[in-house]
Image (cartoon, rainbow, N blue to C red; front, side):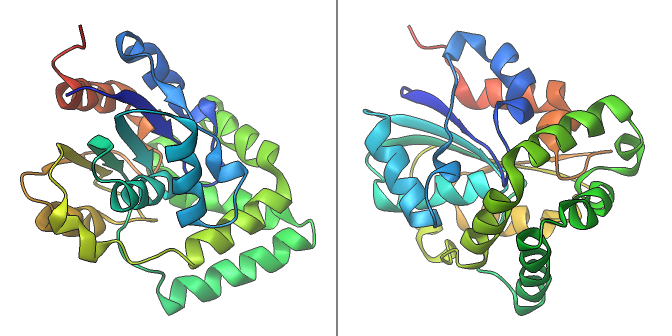
Length: 234
């Protein structure tokens, strides 16, 4: 499997959430994109990624990054030679989650970030990791660094995301679907649904792990990604 390895962060994420993957997957020269920081909706983010990184692509996206990866594969299936979809969903937004996000966006626009972000730690991480001050500190650092404007805009992009499920059966590249067994934000049923719709996809559910699997279980994530990436490019 050839192609440039591109890591696509989740909502408000940056290279911090991929630090252990950048190190562990160094032979594949991973590139972390920031298209989610520069465009207003999922299709535009995917289009920009395809325009900015030429040639065949191996796309690894977490959460919202997985939504961007699936959309890029829909727009240019001939360019995408592999997909790794981590803690993500192919479904459109539900009305319940839309209401929650709209309430959060209203608080972001009022500058009341902490009222949303601090309680969200308990949903983002497995209980055994939610009390790790170093891990949680790194998470909060990049979320606050993104800022209220980005949080509002990216949440709107997620709310308006397209339904990716119809095109999944047409994927022909190697697809890895991975999720924490205790992910409260995108429960394992979302990953199982993607796995069931993609011919030949592989599914990995990580025990003792929540939504932030690249940070919570980096060794397990890297092992699965190396298997997906093999053989090493010449």
